[in-house]
Image (tube, rainbow, N blue to C red; front, top):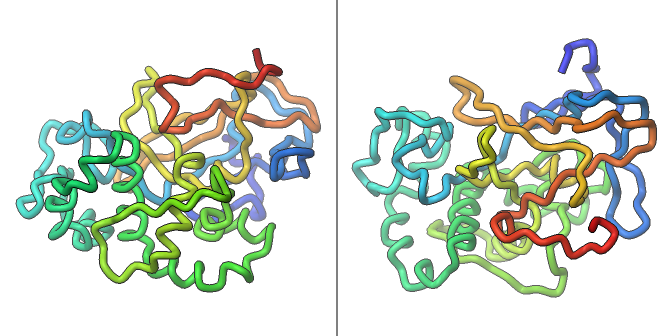
Length: 279
């Protein structure tokens, strides 16, 4: 996205930038919808954002770094848990690994973990990474959740994550995680929002290699079988993370809704559109 497209008001939290024409408006059935307020050409980047947390799929373990997600032939395996591989362990240790290293091996060999589906196992590990990385601010924000306004959540990734809608508001779901001193209500609150809000992270060939939490993208964009934009992922060298960019697929007129293809990790491999309007 050209620097001229950015304004100070479009600089969001978590290293994110938003195109000035992107806005949220009411929707008759969904919570809201993302629209453009001016003509936008195909190829325009509407949102750039980094993940709060990520987790590699099992097939990529030992081939990609568990922190930056980049492929590397010289990864260093953690000598403690022997379950994580990093380009360099010092940064990963400070970010999250020191909080999970002692317990992760026993946890992933437990009856509970082995009884989960592959997708549920990834959800549990991603939730573990999230709380290991952002536990303090998550607990603090969750304790004042009733004070978070509707619009406030769109500017802050932690508030946005906690304000996302669950897949089923009546479902009572709580994942077990290998961390201590975590509010069970917080775990339940987050668990219920994982199945319909996380993203699969893929390369240019659309090969999935990780799952990630991108709250701003979850909050802004509804899903469609005929999307008008698509998420693309770019590694940020030296930052220890990747970047999501929401790229417009076709020219959009003012008022057009921006929708993306469903990237729910639970259904990505067996996706079938159930909406008759999109067939």
